[in-house]
Length: 433
Image (cartoon, rainbow, N blue to C red; front, side):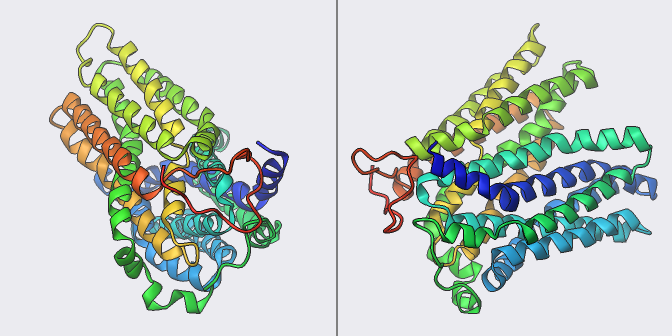
């Protein structure tokens, strides 16, 4: 990494990466506690699960209004508004007098999370030079992974110290307040990135860019071929990430592991996943997007297919551990790939509507795949693993077929360092290759 690239990424930390860590850390400290709060207020197990899943529904439904907000208000203001809305939702969870308010508040948090993520994604798409786009976005993926990894530990620590089930919720409130302060008072990322070579003012910002012709439905009509083809494979990858969080613990329980053993398996996979997040960006920027997407999906495909054949073997625990490690490697190698592919396909002039469609598709995959696999697992856990493996094969085939067509690898000028700043004349156009 060149000094100029490292300097810019460090300068983005207070306004982009710091808020991402805080938002995700607080959210994943609170979300595991939501079913506990619901049960304490009289909900059954089924209803408590529905209330907890309201955040997923909020994320799915939030992309369309988020694109409207980003196009009119700009990314930084949208992030501030989303932080404020999530703050109100967190207060609603903490102070909810009943289940209806609790469920609505969780939905609002998911809704705000969608707007926050889209605004951040749109900003990086329009402002970060193509030469290190993947590394910049893989750091967002790593920031999110850190929050997801550390959030439950924060919740456990707070619960151990206070004995109060509301403590993680108030931790989320504090994290959101710090998020808003960072977004509001850190160096303006829009101005910071527009001062860079290859940056500049994005045409069409504001109400003019957000007219109906530039809405999410229009973006789908205009870019439907790459959206459905590459986006379909991306939705599968998003689903695989969600499925592993459900299938690996279920598999561990089914072969006789206790809670400690299950946590160890999942923790090792998560640690490897987190350790590789920046390597993914390096691979994508230097060799092309396919070299991250394809190995990741192939690794997951092989792992789930092998796992499906090992349930009754004498060394089933070690097979689970090995497959979990390979899944962690695959998931780590794909850190930031969904953000990067969406940014590569989105129009530079007004990316928010297209990115909203892209994120809706990938969020849908992440939400529905674990439900489908869980239904199959009720009949046969090895069958669920085999189906997941075949789904991963389909995703790998899609990436191999369509990424070279729609996102050909950038050809750097002879003798030019990929880590160097891009040509001040503006971003290069990808050539076939």
